[in-house]
Amino acid sequence: MSIYDVIVVGGGVSGLLSTLVLSRNGKRVLLLEKEEQLGGVCRSYKIDGYTIDTGPHIITRLQHGPLKDLMDDYFTVKPTFVPHGKYWVRLAGKLKPFPWNIRGWAGFSGIPLTDRIRLVKMLYDVAYGAKTNPEDYNISLGEYAGDGFNENTLRFLDCMSYFMTGTSMQETPVARFVDAEKYKMKSREEKVSLIRKIHSLLFKEGAIDQTYPLGGIQTITDSIIASFPDNVDVHTSEQVTAIEKGKQFIVSTDVDSYSAYNVVYSGFASELPSLVKDLPGDYRKNVQNTKVIRSLVIWLGLKDCLFNKLGSEIWVDSEKYCWVVPTSNFDSNLAPRGKQLAGFSFILPDRYDIEKEKKEALNAIYSTIPVLEDAVEFIHFQDLVPEKAAWTVSTEFMGSHSPIDGLYLVGTDTEKKSMGITRASYSVLNLVDALKKDKILQ
Image 1 (cartoon, rainbow, N blue to C red):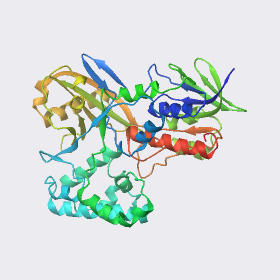
Image 2: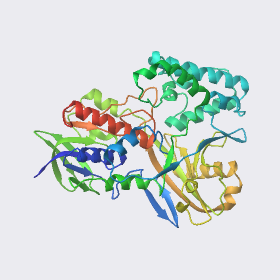
Image 3: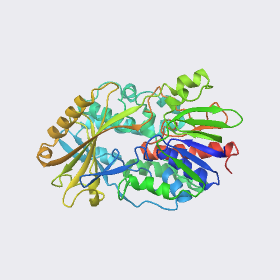
Image 4: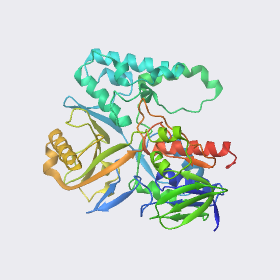
């Protein structure tokens, strides 16, 4: 039996990126994926002339973030991205740009002026207080906000919590709202950092570095796979059943067994104890304590183009909080000529009846914009896991190292920064740091 340098378990975007990084650093890699297709939720497929993404996606922090670093260093084939545009908030019957800065809050009429003033003060206090006393901001937004806010304001804060973490404001830490990209600054620039911060609070438009890939989200997966060198073996439709550590690792599947010096696990961290017998009890308890986020996505094919603004919408005052992404606005080829494709994403409760949720979600869509119902010619439902772990006040993210030497973790349940593909990319960069620290990568 030949021995691989690394076996990567799981072919979602985290596993694919890990495979790319390791292989382009000269490692012989075996990638194992239980499904027929690679990519996880980073996939697209065609139905009735529409190209459907596996859940709505917007790529954040592309100008200076982790995915750009990975693309620059490892991709030989790169996707093409187009600007996302603005985030629009539907609140109190009005559609307004999301208030990224103090100027935006001044005109955000869906919330009373007194509440806007309070929120701006909170924003300022958190933005600067979290840098000096970060432990003070690991409390929930609900606890931090306290009493006295208008009902529309509370609904806005709760909706934004679900949008950013998948959980309510009673579980979302305040620190999530100051999770920001750290730009690399030279020491001589530190003298003007306060001016930069004040300018950011006043003028920064928060969505300028957010994009969508032309051709759909599948193009990211395709670009990663096309960038694999020859020292990668890929096995799909193989379910990993056990990971055992001896002189080397033995990874068993429902098809065969394979040996490697190291293993990178990119599946659900909560499922790792069922595969690895020798995990310490405390570690087992912690990885099994993560809260998995599930979402219901409804894709509507529309006979008419009813979403005319570039960007996406956050529906606060619909019957269910909703994120709306008209993907064919970014790439008209995703829908038949003259038609429009839009994805509507809803967070599912911990326990749910999927048919009941579908009905209620559709009712929420049609009651918010009644003309949609008559324009619909295509409906497609997805029950998905967009994040393997929610960033809550009680969640402990385990990081890249496991208690077993040579076994590493990667994915959105190992890193809390950002969300989606960007969070997955951060986790891969963390893995690279861990492998370099352990002298596995140079």
